[in-house]
Length: 111
Length: 114
View (cartoon, rainbow over the protein chains, first blue to last red):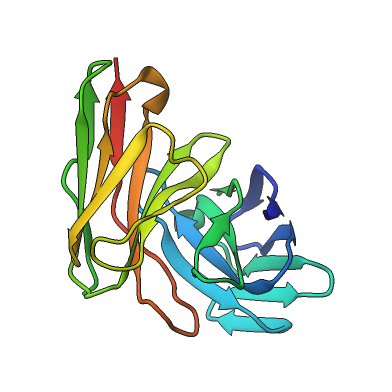
């Protein structure tokens, strides 16, 4: 199975930068996803990394190091609406393409 | 716009009742999934299906069954509901193969079993 670890909760100030880390231990790694979930809503896709390096999408960036089993999600110019849970999910090679989710990080952005 | 629709937003049932949770997607996706989400435990996979009439157990299938008679519809069945099945249930779908195969989620059904 996979062991995926992320902090339970983080707080940050509006306008700041925050980095949410995700570490994983798995065999046959085949991609890492980040999802955002606002309270009471469905998770929505943010990013996908399968190769080492940084992927940038506007205010959000995601980084992956396969050798270290490590990823982070970087949120810049934080806005109040970024308060949400951020879910890290890892996919492994095999017959099915099912990602396994970490427990999620609840981010609170305050003024 | 992509859509995954779950039939009920909130549901209250009694212990021992048979419960059906319905999910419909309009994207012609091959894969469909049922997760439950509990505080502190994250998303856990109950069952998934990669084709009509096909189903595979996820990490926590005990006490649940599923049905996929049509490509767009995936039903989760609680044969005899128990209080420990009180949870948020999320349905999701995805294409069979793709570079990222991201999941598209429904809004969830909050089930309370009394």
